[in-house]
Length: 453
Image (cartoon, rainbow, N blue to C red):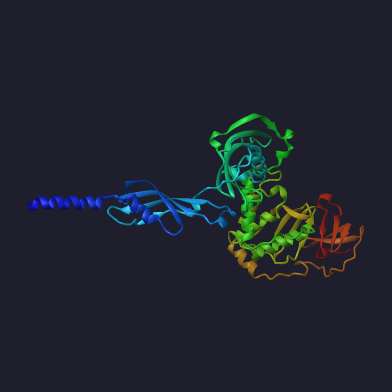
């Protein structure tokens, strides 16, 4: 035989061997391992990857599942969608992908709850966790109902049931108007055991297929929606609670007075970082301010308030803990507003502290600092005078004052003493009225600011 013909035949055989795709038998052998009961090869294809052609085998790897992993059910199997990548001519794949966590269970012979039962489960659980159904929900405030008629239910696991329905939710059009919206949805009910209660594991809404239903509803006719935060605000608040928890903060104490709250905030401004204080502030806000970022809270924007405090207390040359004492030397009160002074008594911060349930909460807060480098340096050289009188004050009395209603006294204001009358008393504080001044200047003062006339 001609040597050229022999070389050509050998070359063809060699090329054939190099480009031969793996057989189903070889793929099944490679993907079979302990616990695998069967391998189903779906297809093998030649594909371009990383600058060269390779063979890619797609297969289902089926494993037996121990009953203890599926709440005691027997005969359940797990199907893992697997991909095996072969260099052309290789006897073994160079990469195999497939995860049990993404597997699909087969053989779960459990009855599916009726459509009526699924409707009740879904509606009740969605009303508790409506934010699970929406990626962004800046105007959505509530889920009203989920209806399940043709559920297409699928067992993902004995503890995970996936099905479809129609969701009706409430959208806030303006501060005073709402409308119902209807859209298809998919959800998963999860449980920890066969006899455990269901909870809402996942939910999603096809918002691209949503449509408004019914007429526009005014707030006067829907008081149950008027003060609800948006779902996005609920998520933000929950995220903030988790952040606070991760920082190791306990819930704030119950405050018995606005002054006690002011002292607490002052201490936190000294001891927490900017990030920690921003998170902690959410716990101290009045209920009407607690939803960050919303324009529909009755008293303003809580997150904006926090941002303003953070910027003033932590940024620039002026640093709060350099200019204010850990225990302020000088306090004032006017109605629900509590004031405390810096080391030089020439600036003061204030908190509008109002009752919120059983405690006092922040309804407003203002931080005032000197922001120049020279001022900040000067403050650092000033020591705190906790327990002593303010500068330029001749008050030498202690906390043993026994002034009563109607007593004529002198009250210190910015280093000067003014005649006044005591209108009310409580331990360690006196509510006074300045002689010759309007009642708008009436305020509570402490022992450092009052003396006998």
